[in-house]
Length: 264
Image 1 (tube, rainbow, N blue to C red):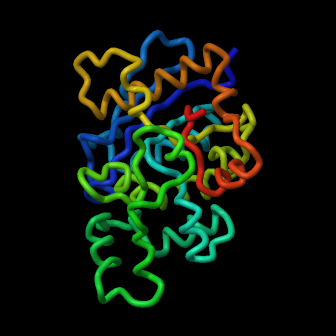
Image 2 (tube, rainbow, N blue to C red):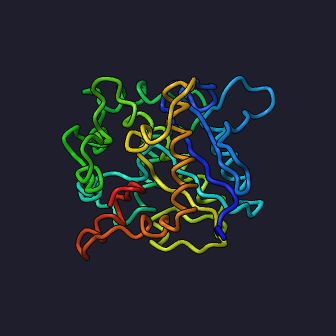
């Protein structure tokens, strides 16, 4: 019997502002006992999901003690080099520092506008380096064939924008949900079955496992994540992915940088 009631796939987006409904932001779910993976309906009166609405969904479910697993397609942390540059000792300190310098959860703030200001010659003191360097990778990204740096804003830069938009919301959801939520792996590698679980995912690894049908690419990403989570749990394999084969040094790095669920 599964420890979870629902498996949620979230294709995240860092475009526009936190209150803007975005077609790229998609939420799909598989409920235990239900035969299909379905899109999660948008909040009443909204034409699409916004980042604030997604955060509220995750928080509300956790507060109601719904045992869910949600895979979100943005990085949950930054490379160790960033920690060292800014003398950040642990992940909570990173989240606090990042939300201060990158308040992308504030109303009307856009990632690209804020980045342009932080990267400008007029940016003073230690603020400018917080734009990061495109050649910096986390260990988990190096273990994949195609994951990009969270600081790589070249091309579409979907991962970079999503991460810079999502980290302040992740901090807020975790702070408000408290003991009812486990953010993996920062709250431990083995989550308690009584808690909701949030994990970073990389949909490009999973999207081709399942026929796309009429879904858009963002819809397929969210769909594939939800299907994969439910499938792995049903096979009894999810626990093995929550315990990747890292040595002591690698594990210490991942406890600050985070890890992509499914990278083993």
